[in-house]
Amino acid sequence: MRRLLMLLPLLAASAFAAPLTSPDQQLAVELRVNEQQQLVYTVQRAGQPVLLASRLGLMLEGADLGSQLALVSSSPVLPHSERYEMAVGKRSQIHYQANEQTFTVKNPAGQQMQLIFRASNDGVAFRYVVAEPSLARKSFREELSSFRFAPTARAWLQPMSVAQTGWSRVNPAYEEHYVMDMPAGTASPSPAGWVFPALFKTGDTWVALTEANMDGSFHASRLRAESSGGEYQLGTPMPAEVFTGGGLLANVEGTLTSPWRVLAIGSLKTVMESTLGTDLAAPAVAFDKAKLQPGHASWSWALLKDDATVFEVQKRFVDYAADMHWNYTLVDADWDLKIGDAKMKELVDYAAAKGVAILVWYNSSGPWNDTKMTPKSALLSKEQRAREFARVKALGIQGLKIDFFNGDGQSMIAYYVDLLKETAAAGLLVNFHGATLPRGWTRTYPNLMTAEGVKGFEFATFEQQDQDKVGPHLAMLTFARNLFDPMDFTPLVFGDIPKIKRSTRNGFELAQAVLLLSGIQHFAEVPEGMATVPPQVKALLQALPRRWDEVRFLAGEPGKHLVLARRAGQQWFVAGFNAETSDKTVTLDLSFLKGREAELIGDGDGPRDFKIQGLKAAARTALTMKPNGGFVARFK
Image (cartoon, rainbow, N blue to C red; front, side, top):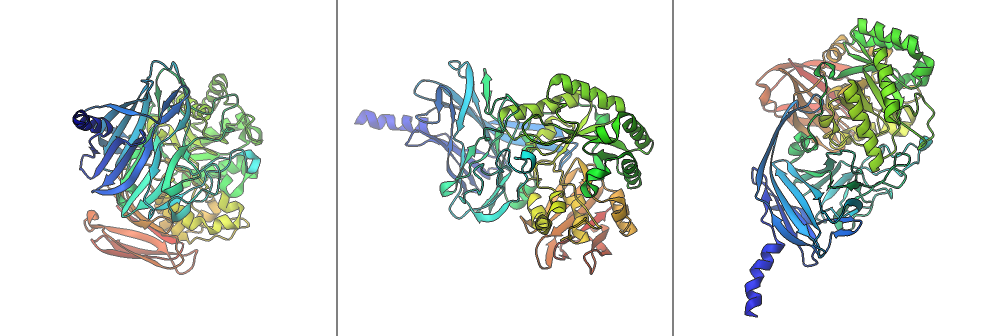
């Protein structure tokens, strides 16, 4: 008995690790082995629980690293510091600081696994590393990582669509509406689960879940459909979500390293201003800065659809881009058949003389869907890609919009990464459509300007029901899908949408130009619609910065309203929109603008009217937004 009492402190030391805290001491992560010999962790903010005891662990072929575990060691806490630059993002200069600690665990067979945790002032991240020499090949079977919230927590989540369903079997493409403000633990309406980013509120703390640092060796994850008791576990892609003949789950020789599991944690302001989604991504590959040109694009397809992909119409959209001081025109599907290389070269040269560059569309797909648009299946092999990239560069084309991918399996993620690496080497910009969430790729591959991965504006041109939801949909996307990664929603229409009644006011449409973050913002409006706006509106869109340096969250609630301030150089743009059915008055602290004055463009009396007025920044600046309305104020 005496010997047992002497051993108890040693047993306790092996089962518990001292909490890892953030630099400001507000966040704390505690790791332990519970009574069932399972590895669990908790997260607290300012002493209050954020995550209750949640599971950790991996199941590999030939290695159970999820049960009967012992905590072998924990490293000293080390400060981690990185400075990096972003051409596409909410901040251009970022300093990421965190405390890092590595924990080593083993199973009864002596097989070991490391967990690396980081705690920063705006969140927590962890990843797994398995270098176990007894397993020459690490074949993934299951991840036990979970996120358990209190019974009172609320959730804002987007269902994952079922693989190879929908039009021409193009799902999944992250193109569903979020289910908003539901009890945590509510099951997904889709058996495929919930997508990242996933947003939660527990007490007065917000949590945004995502992952980062996808290098092509690992599949992309999601949250499982069932989350009994508010415990969300990581799930895997569906079997069909692969490159033809490729693998579904991680399966590597040597060391297996998972992506970072990322939790932005704090007040809504802290989460909205967080850059964790890129902080945890790998550093940038080399790319010619002279070719790294974010900006804005004219684009005919949004309203005019397939019949507009002809030379004369595209030439008119080049003129439109030049008049708007936008630096790109996107030519969409079937350009190779309807325009052809010779006329495309003529269009590129015409555009270049006006300071406009041309982007063109490609169909990524092999046999995994039934799409017909061309160029199709021209990027499936390294040899094909080299040939196509040489072709478009010879034509003077500066970037590709690549569409219709096939989900999140490891081989499909590897396909994305191959495309990003090879376009970067070729000096080409990229826009992924019909695509997954980028998960921080814009840091690692600076040539990735934007990605769809969203139920974008095009759906609001197909069905009235999607148009009717566009207000709350966008007011949700800005808090989740567009939180860390650029989003090609293709915003902004002031005129008519064929066969659709617009549900938003012009102020709401204008605000999207500032609130939505995309390295190249592809505007849906056509020249005829732009011709209807006051000269001040056109001048604002002509003067829009092509990249942003800083962001400040000023007011908002997911799915309801949002007000942000974005800085470019010495200019500040304050923009907001209201997706609710009644007027919304917000009182903003604009003291950081030190009394500067702005021209504010907002909603007039009618849904297609504008009201233009002066605004002076103050510590208490009250503004009222109409239902489905909004505004932009430019402080020069």
